Length: 99
Image (cartoon, rainbow, N blue to C red; front, side, top):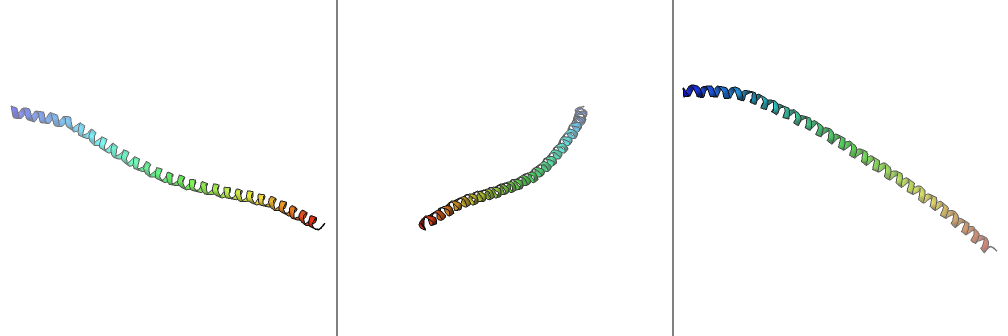
């Protein structure tokens, strides 16, 4: 009787454990899918980060180039104004020296 009882218990336990095993397999499969999805998201984010870095580099370069151009124009304008003043002074000095 003990052997029959043990056999019956084993059968009941086996029947109860089978759905749990299937559920665990489903959970494992689901986790594998999540991991795969996260890997895809990671790759997409890395690509997007690279593109943003390239765009920022390009924007900084463009801004520095424009700043340099503006600075050059400013210096050129100030130089031109100064040269006109110097020329006027030289002309005036020449006129005074000839008197």
